Length: 236
Image (cartoon, rainbow, N blue to C red; front, side, top):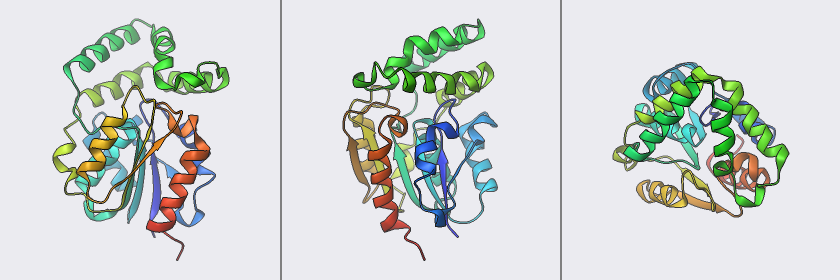
């Protein structure tokens, strides 16, 4: 049996995928992994995911989860039957972003996590959602609930991530790439680059949407995922 595994983003959990979990086909037994909260590197996270979920897999990863999904398919290409990459980036860390993460980590260690995350909250969403206080609070609570230790560990994992572009040309499973048209953290150019590297990959740009597309535009995201899954993994 093929299982659908959702991979959350940085410091996120199943809340990030709550709209998708209830909508996905039951024959794929959808589940959200938490390996990113239990291991210190993308390589170790990927190995743990493969051990925890034997058999054929469909991976659906967003942001950091997409980076992890690309590492999983590098480690076990024969087991990945389809791949959905949402608002993510195949490039390694830049010097500028590494410096920003180091500064944020220093503030996390000083007990200023809430201040840092609140100040950067607008970057995660489309400007049209600026007054959606319920959505913004849900996301803020989600990340804060991860705790300082996880915030630091997962940021360091991203800082050390490999250049996934080097192996994406070898990916031969059906691949769907989604991105919000207003994503300021992983701009559409990053998704277009991934789509160009994977032969036959499909690309969808979600309108009026920022980085957190599973929470911002669940109806549109679900419709796209369901249509794609119907072609790559129909019921037996």
